[in-house]
Length: 126
Image (cartoon, rainbow, N blue to C red; front, side, top):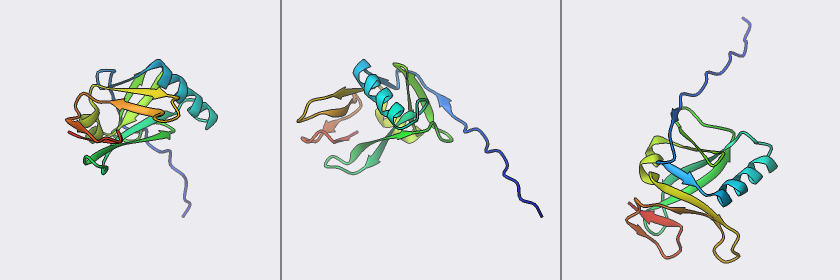
């Protein structure tokens, strides 16, 4: 019996728009730089919401090669952002920004759906 590598099926994805998630020009520049440095010029930022943190939910961000099966893909400011459908419910209408500030720098999510934030700014409740 000969085993051959069958081609992997293309992931089934949903195309979203900036009403779901939008990023600023500064965040776009930083993400493009990070993806290029990692050798993933066509990659994406994965934005997820997971349990944890002071307020019960927190954001998790990773750089990935592209969307996985059932992901929602949003093309915003020339960058791909992907998320699973469950996370999408929590981040709808969010804006992702980036700051070089030494104290509170990094990527920050402004989420109108968040009912409360903790004082550290790393978690929220919906």
